[in-house]
Image (tube, rainbow, N blue to C red; front, top):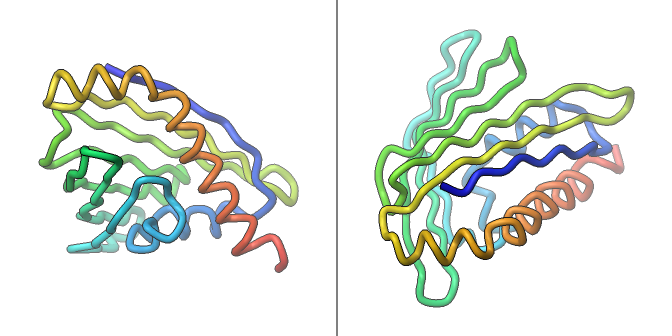
Length: 149
């Protein structure tokens, strides 16, 4: 199973970053290979927000939609994503946010496996490059949206 972590320091508040990460329907505007994002439900339960959403991901012949369950834990400034159904056999994303002066530190961890063994092997080969592109896209988006404040 491909697994990796990335840590970045981004020049904006953790609240803005969290809001941006939870705005799943905007992902097609800036996330590489994301073709569509749809939120089906969003429940604020006080210390936690639960979201059910779809992401449609595509590149060359690979084009799939997967449903995920997102939990934002307000007390720990963390977001956890797991898959519900779709092409993924397993998905676990974890985001951790921390203020660092005027910046924020973001720790992102992803661990996944596709159901299709051939596609999974192809993904493993390009995983690090793809993850870096996605992390860079989130950073660029945050700077565009929030740096000028």
